[in-house]
Amino acid sequence: MSEMTALSRKLIQTQADTISKQVEHFSKTEVKCLIRHYNQLLGQPAVPGRAVNGLDRGKFRSILHNIFRMTDDMIMDGVFKTFDKDNDGYVSMKEWIQGLSVFLRGTLDEKIKYCFHVYDFNGDNYISREEMFRMLKNSLITKPTEEDPDEGIKDLVEITLKMMDHDHDGRLSFADFEKAVREENLLLEAFGNCLPDATSVETFEQDVLQEQLEQ
Ligand SMILES: [Ca+2]
Ligand SMILES: [Ca+2]
Image 1 (tube, protein in one colour):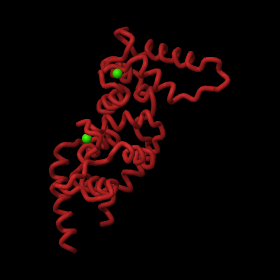
Image 2: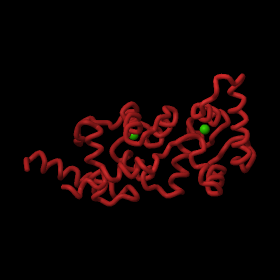
Image 3: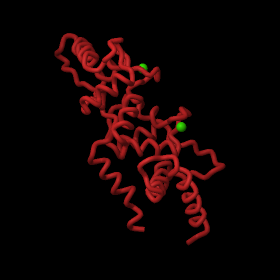
Image 4: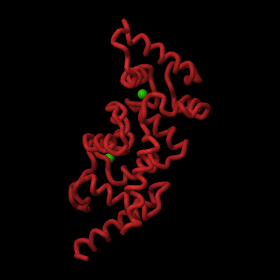
């Protein structure tokens, strides 16, 4: 074992000690696997003192696309914003692992908060008619033969509001969203897929989190 390897092992150990206290659902060993994987994704070791900011939007999107098979750019931007908690334009190691804990193993409560945040694009704590319209328009394939495809989407927004807007103020608060999803879990991803499908979660768990078994 070279000195460098011993040093980087020590560093990962220290990082894992800190991060595993700040995230739910992962053991310290799993956090170590996630750190190694994050370093691979980043393409260079995240050494303290060196200016490595994290995954930028472009890199983050291609990871979501390649690993979690997401395709919707608008939703992926919302996912980026949700992972990048301190809003510095980069997903740091800690932000990545915290985000993954909801992504891969989140409880329904955590997923409701996460999805609401993804869908609230301007961060004003409401999902507005305009935000719903943009997301639904973006995720639905409208037939080119339709005279005014926007009309159908507007109708869909109104139907959605009728279902989910419990206090009737024409927008969805977190309380509205939470109540609706608790009554009908399928509404969790009502405005677009922002969580990975079961198969890619399973593949990720096998490829990344069970890596230690071979070492
Ligand atoms: Ca950040
Ligand atoms: Ca909003």
